[in-house]
Length: 299
Image (tube, rainbow, N blue to C red; front, side, top):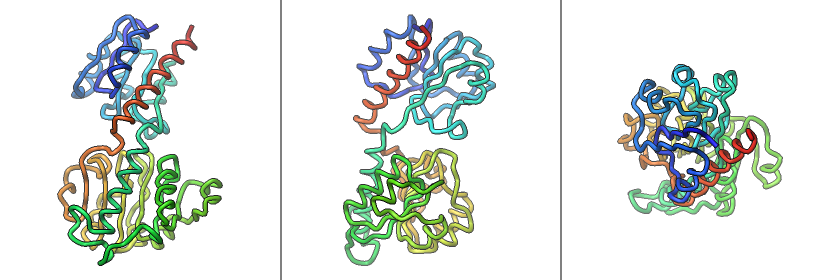
């Protein structure tokens, strides 16, 4: 059991999970707003030996140095790699601080978001004044490229394939499971040139689209980004989006900032499509399981 556990920001646990959390710590403090900078984060942590945080706050080495009692950091958000994490994983490893994260808790909502926006765009439903191809069109036969064939990329590919899309993909390596489903691996630039729709499903802080890639992508294309940060270089993206193209991002973080949110060729909801009732339930279950396993291993 922890002596003191502090959630330094809202972490998305459902009420039942917050109740269950009490069995893991003698004292629990749950902050309901986002801290303003390193000093405030350190003050909130204080002498706690366990910390919980979501994706909106960065816990760097300078902050952790001010909090020498921390033994455990529970990321109530995705953890894919040290480079993409909002916690300094390297510092934590060097100082015997355990860091856990979760994965695959909001993917279903993201898949539904892509399907919803794409159907409306192709048919001219809702806010779309006219169908993208001039007359209402189905997903059937739609040339669609997935960049990043991880869990969510694979789920999107499966869903679109069910509706008859022609799926190709680019990833760090070929995926045998994807190939077995008939999905075609392509080098990145070839993928961009070949497809009418590109869907970026990359880890946070992974940028693959630069000037050369936008040149291969060309015009009259639809680009989705469902990651937690832009998949592109902003300067090159701005030039591309000013042409006859369309970009969908669910969150401002995926777009890269408010400066492009009102661009006529950008469709941004301003909220993560993965933040559903079911996602928070899955998140809560995985966060509690991580804490429980850490305590059991320490005993």
